[in-house]
Image 1: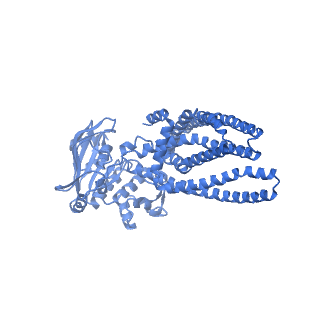
Image 2: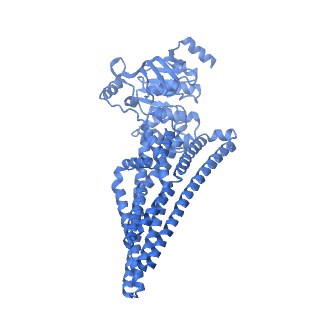
Length: 586
């Protein structure tokens, strides 16, 4: 997708930039009045600057005429203008900072909201480090330039036009010179635009790759140390930095070359302009004051042109960052389903429990292999259902389908009040409040144990938190901590063993008090006795809970009401003989 956009961009850089800017201002339409306010301040700033420059010729003429009174009057006026100019500059910077910080917060929140609501399978096409880079660096570029970019170009272009008009008023023959030098500058400014764009795109790709690599390194730092891979990982970062350095220096080189060529053409143009003006003074057509104005206006034009040309690399950065952010914001959202039937299902389910059915279901990942082919399973209140099978055959995928994180292609998956098939709902985002989930891996967040528990149940009392910890057999070690449930958990559960983190995660899921509980290898780090105790506690506390778990450890299967083997696209119930065989082999 991004490659195609690059190709399209090269086919018409100015047109592509136009569409990107159009998207930016449409996206930030709520801030247009603020942007216009900033533009208005800058126009006033430009007007004062122009007035200061324009009056120079008058000062020169009065000075040559020895009119001290007028020179003094104009000097006082200049002092006032400089003070006003300083105040306007302060206001302009303050307004720009106000806009930038507000728009960056708005954009970051939009991206974050998109990520947490996006279709999971589409989102996994992007590495989390790449998303973070787009949310930080690219969002900063867009927010910083949404206010200043066009304003800088428009105000300086306006200043160039007005300065040119003033030059022509002083001597209309200058129009011939303007016609000659205009195309020279325009052609020179576009020579290296494609090269600069390529470099900016390369820099962004490298930054995203490096961020992704850093994230994975820090997440797996123990393994990096254990295998003695520190130097190998460092050499990879060295390569990233060398690649980024080359791309950055290459971009800088082309930017400088673009500036140099354009600046040289500007100098040539200025020489032509001033030489012609000087000739006209010698011919008696222009006064010395008029010549001073022409020179001053030529300088203004040159400075404005320089500021505009400096925006070329910025423009290409904006184009690259805009397209990268658009890719994230264009991800399809999960379907948000709401129906009046949910309340009835949830209310009736409190008395009878909620059953889960999968019937004749087929599923394949996008651009991936077929995982399930016409499979069925069911789980009822009070039951513990186990899913077993080789790694990669679909156990976790089945739980994701039950959570509606993945969407099935054929068949049906639904929840219903036990014994009442007429009171049912297809599994979707709407039915997630009925389900508590304990995923694989460490899912504890930085903060206290209490804060982690309240993520699921903000209104839970301390007694309820302790009860959930007791059910998961976590309170045994929590109560021995100096701060108890107020003890801080480090990043990724640092400070606790894998088994302790698993028990905390189970407690958090229990605290949600849902009729359905899904556990994905959630007891893999527990000893057999603790594993059995945790599962028994969960079902004893709520005899109507429907529990579905995946496991590689057959030791827990004897406590399960039904065991499904997932293998080669099929889901089949296995009997006691096969269960015992699995336990013996284990």
